[in-house]
Amino acid sequence: MGLERLLSARAGAIQESVIRRVFEEARGVANPINLTLGQPDFAVPEAVKRAAIEAIREDRNGYASNRGLDSLLDRLCGLIEVDLGWRIGNGGAGSPGGAGLMVTSGTSGALVCAAMCLLDPGDEIIIPDPYFVLYPRLAEMTGARAVPCDTYPDFRMTAARVERLITPRTKAVVVCSPSNPCGVVNSEREVADLRELCARRGVVLISDEIYDEFTFEESRTSRRAGDPGRACCPSPGRVPGGFESCLVVRGFGKTYGFTGWRLGYAAGPKWLIDQMVKVQQHLYICAPTPLQAAASAALDVDMGPIIARYQQRRDVVVARLREVTEVPMPGGAFYAFAKVPEHLAMSASQFKDAAKARSVLVVPGMAFSARDTHVRLSYAIAEPVLERGLAILCELMRGR
Image (cartoon, rainbow, N blue to C red; front, side):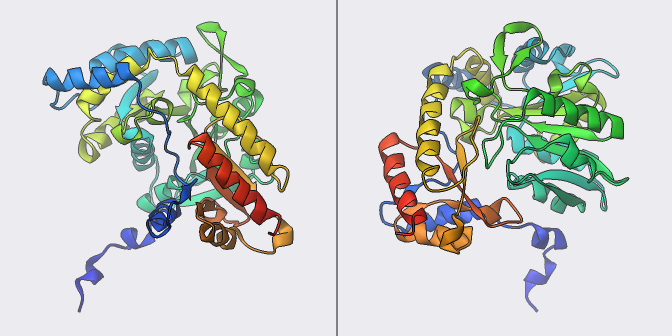
């Protein structure tokens, strides 16, 4: 009898990431045009590199507090007060009944800790469809049930679509804006309505804002609570009293290009953050200490010019693809979610294989959805390579 029988049912239930599978397929493709991974193609800012190197050389390589490095927590407390209007006390601990804060091992680490603190077997968590690939896994890891909210064809997760899915077993609703895989940004009204719905129905709204800084100009329609002169991405946390029922999850890797450093943070109800810190004590202990020190330096870097360059790429991608198919306007992130034209009579997975035969790698919609009608392509790639990939994809979508 093989020892494979010892594997847990939990391990068997967790599905492999289709994105990673497609990425691995690149090994068998000569000179691939890889449009699969959400990996920024710009270098980490020099000031941030220097801060990380200095922290390592200064021997700041031991454990930090489970909640996070004090210097970074202090910076984030100030940022959150200006941005969301939340007052968080020393060390991110907050005050009784108020908001709390913690630094996490990436935004995925924050989401896993939140799921472990909120979900018991049989509970429900409502997620958008299409979704980031981790969202259904949060339910699989905890014995809960992920309830998909169909957002086709405009890919907007609205309160009207969510409300009919809430049951007595619902513990949380996840919204991602700008979204992965679509890049769609919810409006200020939409996020406020979601927050009001969740507060009224007694569930936690988890707002995954990993791309909040990576929002393009026309989608920056909200204003910071303490800096009304600065336009920003709409957030349910900015609604008065948002911290009472909203967990805001943000990260550094996508904005500043150090995805491999695994740094994020979560702010929300103190009663939830305190439990998440306790879980992190055992899962991750703390986010990497010297890199937390470098993240403080990242907050001083203006990434506006790079984001503007990505907006130009977005414009090119949408213009080219709309000549041959339907694609929602990405208001942020660096993805386009393009429909496979119906005249091709093929699924997104079949289209992915056709593209691979031409050395172009894209991710089929079934990686993110119950449907397999669209493909996700990332434009976090050099413009000349992107242009070649778009030319091939457009030819395929024309049926050539």
